[in-house]
Image (cartoon, rainbow, N blue to C red; front, side, top):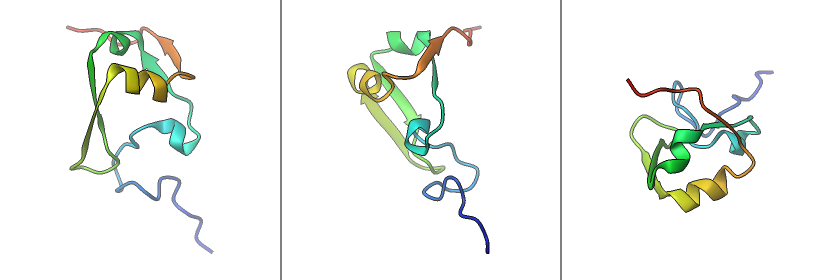
Length: 72
């Protein structure tokens, strides 16, 4: 019997919108917390999800935060 794909609601090769929906640990770069608007992939290669900072903060309130990306 073939095991189910871990991201069955995502197109192969696409990133899940919010990993916590798939019981994944989530790490958010601190710089994102300073952005007024957030855009993330929607689980396929064509959908872009847009939300305000307060919505993103609510979705990621239990995420670990740190500084791991830099602007060049």
